Image (cartoon, rainbow, N blue to C red):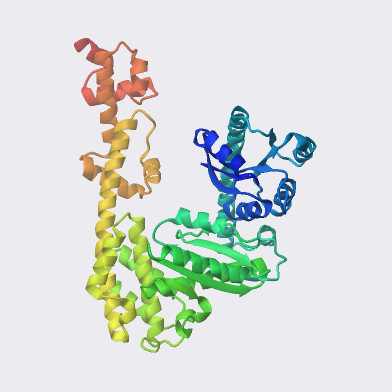
Length: 508
């Protein structure tokens, strides 16, 4: 519905407009009524009406002053329709020159006002549709721009474009506000846009689906950004799990990635504590904030888990738990804890990519091992790592087999439907993201025949059907069975049936 505000210092006019017009019929609802310009101005700023009907002569602030103030002070002013007495016609002409949509002479005529509502309704709806499309296009563009920055792309052109978008000069502190919320992401983004300040960015979504907002430190924008985070936490924390994290770094657009990394570190730390809440990077415990993940050791361990090399598992686990800086496995329990948290996240990511039940696995680990943050000794952490890795190896292996069986089934279905097309095993492997040699072996295991043999059988069976049921020429039968070369078709048909296609047709 579109919102309309009625403004007139005569109560009987307001009552007449409220009762004589079928506002719903034209997609409008009355969001407020005001009897003077000051009250109307306050309502416009709060209610953001799409359309305002206003008298010209009113106490304190006239209708023309109300229109002029809206046009100059509001980013998106409403559309206005003037209500005028006969002696105010010249005022109405002046108003029309100020981009007022139309005017009505008192006493108000029902047909006239409904005609205006019909016209305004179309205009406003078209404008809303255009704005929504522009907003979606801009959101996609901003998302792409920021993710290029977050993924490490470093160029002066990219930074200049970001600085221009945030209306900044390149030397301000940069802040990142990051949300992780279980539900209502689109609603969160809409609320962020509604509360947006001049030096905030469009909300963006990072690679893991978290919602973020950047701000440059200008005119108190960072304080307002914190207020936004507190407000959103207040709104959503009663309904769902939400973490709000802040990171800040100096250096203009070039500092945005670091600000994001800090916010992400704070968010992960809060998540690792199994808590919702608001967290600032600078408030993290010293070890938690600075401990980094040994990416090489983590990659090796995950690869060992994925390849189901159980005999190598314990060695790779121990390699992950050794602090490269000291070479001692028990020198820093907090460092070990960070490695295990990264291992958990890596396993969950792999399981998600294989379309496994992530929530079920998390619950199983929680029931079996408890929470990692409550473990305080290296031996306990090492035991936790080994059990987690063994469970992950088993679940990922089972899920991979299940997914591969499902994929092979889909490959066979695809061949059954598309056998008339030019099909190559290598191309099918690429299409279904599999190794070609493995696909060939799995296909034979599933169907009992090699891929090429299975494909030829399907085509010959189709050729037999066409020879029995149609009057196609031999060449047309060949093409419609998947053999563009008629001679090759005839030779294959003879090889597989012991007779020429023409003889088969006569026999039938």
